[in-house]
Length: 120
Image (tube, rainbow, N blue to C red; front, side, top):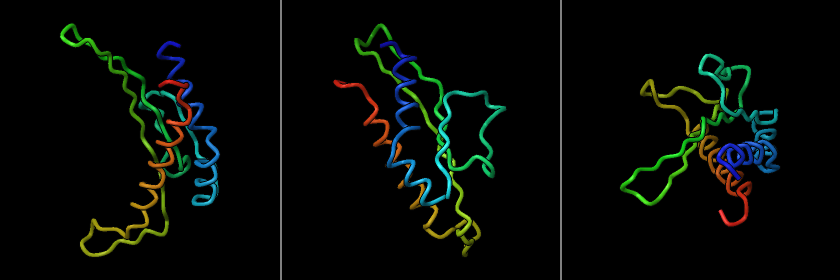
């Protein structure tokens, strides 16, 4: 399995994860949109495309001084909660949004782990 196949396996696994889909549907009334890499000028819209997970390009890092190869992949999550209300001070919001972010991050992480091939 090469890096691209590994990356595709993760993206597909997250997109098909039943727990993540059920959570998104219950909290936002729609399934979660999962995007593979895309140009920065086509970033998902925070009004029309939420909830979403956007995976960045996978990378491979190594050096001559290290015998280990490190693989990395970043991801962004877009959520919108109309129930959040601004409190004092101006930049403080109710914890509902934070709870949604933490729940979503946990579910994405579990979906990534579940999609990994055996032995990874």
